[in-house]
Length: 277
Ligand SMILES: [Fe+2]
Ligand SMILES: [Fe+2]
Image (tube, rainbow, N blue to C red):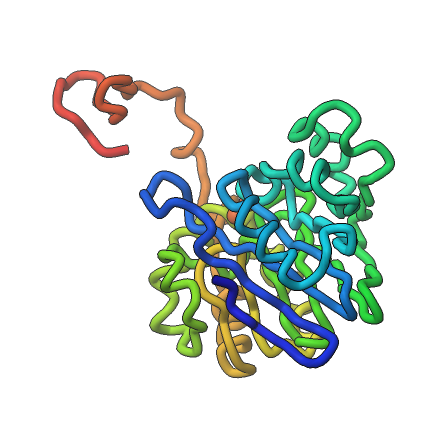
């Protein structure tokens, strides 16, 4: 079931949180549908697990021929592994960073993306949608090298891809967060490892503060709702050390531990005991 993040007479933002098996093997993902005056865009459609239900969900709002775009924040499998099916079932264009423009066709059968990819330059841009538009905001290295976030000026939602994510179930992802301090333990480990550097987080925050944002909506986990929670998130993330700030010589040693293919655990070189990685 989709959650309505926003709706008025001509514009809607829908979020799907549970279009996959929750058996713990694949990370929980959110997919988004934005509709303006009867035409629409899918943001970060996800893998094949999500395709059928997302497609059906979309057809409740408009016919598939009215899907203008499949918009991808970056090119990870949890973002566009289903690209072949979207290119086959609709006439939509793929909107993706120029960094990934010539890599994305590897997700599809030959020819499916021909003349259907809008490669976005690093500086981003304003993309028309129905009678409105989406802002494609630079978010490179957060975490992907060619990465965009999407701001919808009607709903004042900023879709932040892999930024502001939390590790939750689909049910938990439906409940917006208003208290950032209590939420940090669910975000911290991910951001420390997946975000590239504090410099990038500070540059992004400076840009994001210029926008009127009512809600941050990530691709994994729960939305962050309200001006105070959004500003508290900015304050946390602009002070976070992550990625190359933390990595040092110790992280680049020729390895000695064994990978046991039976237990799928790491094993220290001089012991038979199983050690954690
Ligand atoms: Fe990603
Ligand atoms: Fe992701």
